[in-house]
Image 1 (cartoon, rainbow over the protein chains, first blue to last red):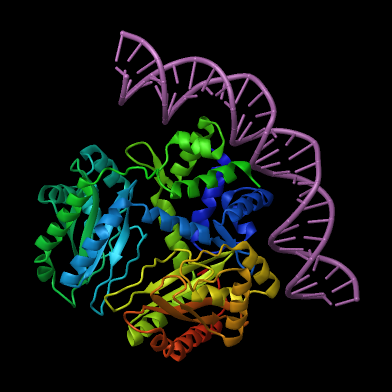
Image 2 (image 1 turned 45 degrees about the vertical axis):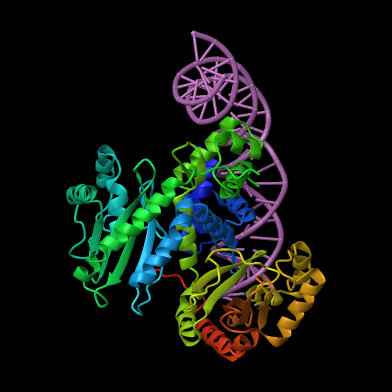
Length: 254
Length: 254
DNA sequence: ACGTGCGTTGCATATTATGCAACGCCTGGA
DNA sequence: TCCAGGCGTTGCATAATATGCAACGCACGT
């Protein structure tokens, strides 16, 4: 809607790929160098980009700090965290918390496995939306029309032989997840890693977040991991209860 | 420099404080509602803000994902990480990696303590710049003129009785840190937590990052923690060596 | 039923961003 | 040493763009 802001914001994902100099930015935006310079300067003043010693630009510290604040403000994270830690203490595996937001599912909290073999993931990273157990839960709760539109929009990368291959299969999987109230990812993202996940619901019953326990095959088999399902569901329900009980985000105006 | 972009970016820190509706944003920006709406819409298209069910705006998922990519691209983090893990395995305490960037020092990596009592911190969070051991190291390496300017600019919040009280004391501390080549924070930020930190240097000898080991008093005394100093310095030096050895950020154009 | 508050829209105005061309600076080659 | 080429930077006239206004629609509370 606002061309100038639009162009400025387009610089950020561009720099996320790696540092770039003025000319490269101008070219990829399709604008004159002087225009790109002014946009970059404005971004720089706000700390969104940083100019490194070789004069090239990269994303700045303020961006990282802002994202941090954004996550800290998510009240669901606040409430869930102690439960995640508790679950980790009981089962020892990696525990994740994820939310859905406009075509993306991302991890907003994580408690690391106590086993030496750990899976790779990072808070803030968008998850593989077509295979992750938490993504299935979050999407399964969307209205049917929206699910169909979304399913068509996604790509279906074949991370492994068990990855969801296409929209039809995905919609079927969502339907199943919707009915059973929990989800799994058995080697659909990484061959040797399995997950079980359960939904966290708000007062109105809508799924507001999802949590999962993940472990590599070398630590526990898929069947063994599935025995944890009742525990995961109980934990998720406990979080749901606490989240629903609270007043729905009051202003803290003293 | 660019008024429109400037206004749009000013919305982000504002929303970082918490969700806000259109009127609030317009007021705090000092612009007409319609202007604020257009800016918010543009931010929304880029996923920088999200409109929650009560119509209020908050920071969006794309912002978090971008920040994530920004950190993953920091090559120093990549190189340092295995060393941080190794150090954690040897001493068991929380290990941090931090960088300095334009008046801010922030954690870019962390390995959690193996002890049950842990200190609170989060990757991406700006550190208490006047007391943190890593901040002292990073600032101590700046040219003297810059140090003086910076020292004047900072606030000196008295987190504890041992916090750095003012600019003069801070500059003296930086001088000391500069000479000895390592730094501590003994209860300057939180009464019961101590840190020892060592600098990581690039090929030119400049400090590019700093790492620290932190532990609460209830786990080890400050004196005991100080016995880890040689180990911390050796680890930092190992990272420095590996970082300097590499070619200085080459393009990955295949 | 009526009024108030908030988000939204179309539009005329003028503020604001844009691209151009020229300059300065550094680097590398002759 | 001098010249050429590349890159970032500046001032400026022009034109495109953002802005505020006023009016509308809608929901909520009285």
